[in-house]
Image (cartoon, rainbow, N blue to C red):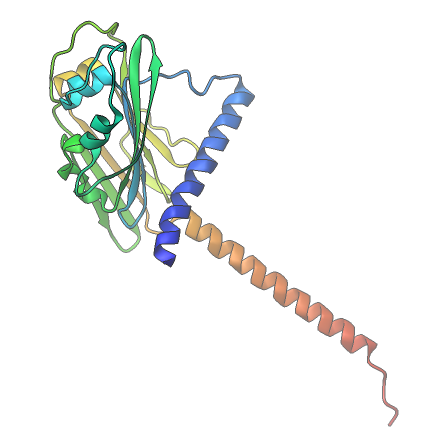
Length: 254
């Protein structure tokens, strides 16, 4: 029960804090945090035990050309969410939610997926273009993902201009000691992004993701520090009460 509670609470806490900080910073800088648009993105919240929550946000044409799924690219056509759910559902992935939206004359799908062991996620057809590794050492954990060829399925003209982007985004639970993202950035909330032009992803230009991080999560360290502070405050309070009581005791004459 405790392990399940930690799985539910920790990713939610990370998502809330990361999103809140990002939005506040963007507002302070006068930047629209939603201005960067992707035709396909995988957003992975991975935990040190290998469990993960994965968000896929993609246009339907991008899903068709990159993953080969049979969905209607015509935005006026009926899109059955059950077909989307069936594509992402597998023995190693569980679909929690599917929603849709429209942008730039294209229909988009937004899927939340729960994964018990990210090392097996490549067994799911939707993620079979990647291999995943999570290797734990005494003091560090290494995450590696190799993204290989796309399905390469052709689609009709859907309005792409050639500048459309694909992104793979990692939300990590502990301090990052190394990563190979071309941006060289670690955004607030331990977020690292690998971007690629959609045209390059269609051609199967590989992406190599390599990250090393501490074996103890930031949340665990914070809770330990918070717990230690509570204990110290309690001890100080008890000693203060004891001191006051000692000073107030009457002196017995000899």
